[in-house]
View 1 (cartoon, rainbow, N blue to C red):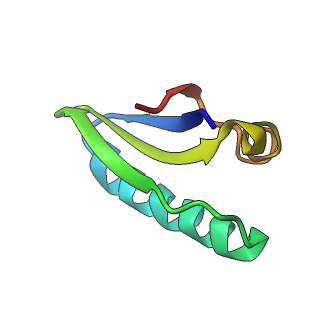
View 2 (tube, rainbow, N blue to C red):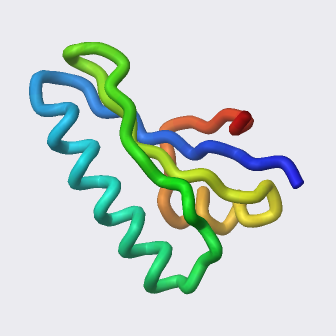
View 3 (cartoon, helix red, strand yellow):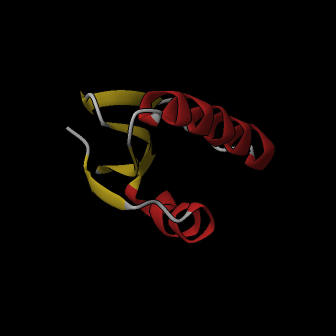
Length: 77
């Protein structure tokens, strides 16, 4: 089964802190919805750009995407 990485982009001097906080909400959503999602995280792409993400199976993508409205997505390798 193909895995997809749903991504939220944060820009600016507080991007890292905002992404950290957003990941907390992603983990809360996973618990509340009782989803079998184990991969979440944050990645700093530059001083002014950090992402928060979660990885879903392709068949889980549409309901999660429609609820959480990520900025973008990509195939997870």
